[in-house]
Image (cartoon, rainbow, N blue to C red; front, side, top):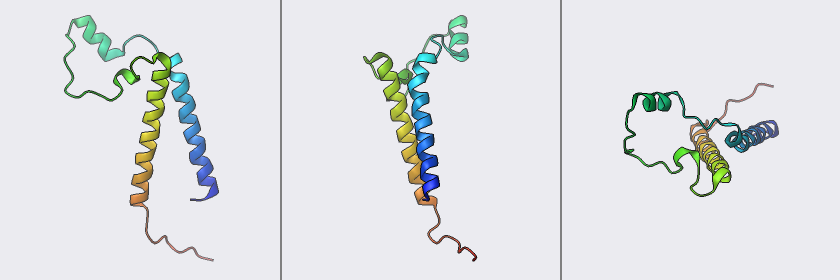
Length: 99
């Protein structure tokens, strides 16, 4: 990976983490459209078939810090998986460059 690419990846990671830090403070406390519509119609909330590791994008008992941590952990896990997939898919023998 070239130095330019490394700076690009690091810059993207910093931007993602800044957004993760700011989003709990900027997010609306009101439910989203689907959840609001279900509440208006009176649809009961069903038990989930799968329990998410960070329900409602937060770590229980940590308030805003828990939201920031959950988002940061999610970003890091997603980028790590993407990096591993990229390593698996990259070419073993890159094409030769012409002089």
